[in-house]
Length: 262
Image (tube, rainbow, N blue to C red; front, side, top):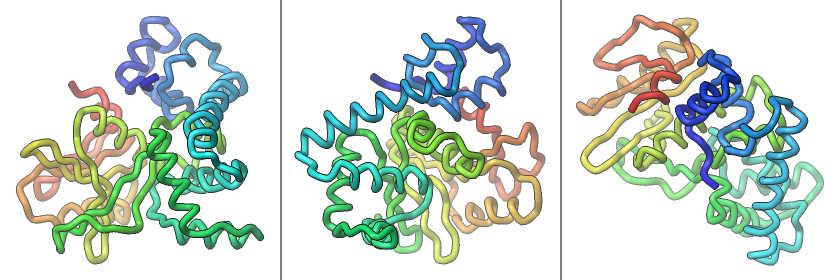
């Protein structure tokens, strides 16, 4: 079962006359994700969360616990919940092991890494590696992990405003992968580029943020891209309805417009 993209989600909303407002539909897409089954239900948080939890738990049970003979399913759930809570943040098996230790539990770094590998093999999580733009190589540690669908964020920890930046990155990643882009994270000496997207001879550099409300945010998002001197397109994506700063060839786009591009 492949989740809908935002354009498909919006099309179904329009077709069913549930919502004809793009902004409202996107709010629901961020919260509920793109699994087709939700369109046969009432827009009710409790019912939809139960449905998404059933999908999530089925993947955990059939594709991970049973397939890999996991003895401590509770520890698996705790590790995956940590990844969900830190969606879009750099993490490592060692860091997760230390977190579990702080919760008065014990799990080896090897076990954590095995559980993460099982989750990515089950297509529950996507691993995105970092690319050293100065050294021109993929790094072997401290990756980022994203969900296969943002609805599983709602299923596991609920919808929280502080999670929105990570959810937006997750949505953009899924869209890029669906369009056939190979995605990594750009590492600079003192900055980071959210996504480097490559497809055949094409390449794009992309920053994702909620808003560009003040100069501090603008500088943070734009300066990372300004540090890259090649000629490939560079974008800053946000939820703002308009923004008039396209500097040094870096283009701004509304996230919803980007997702609806053909």
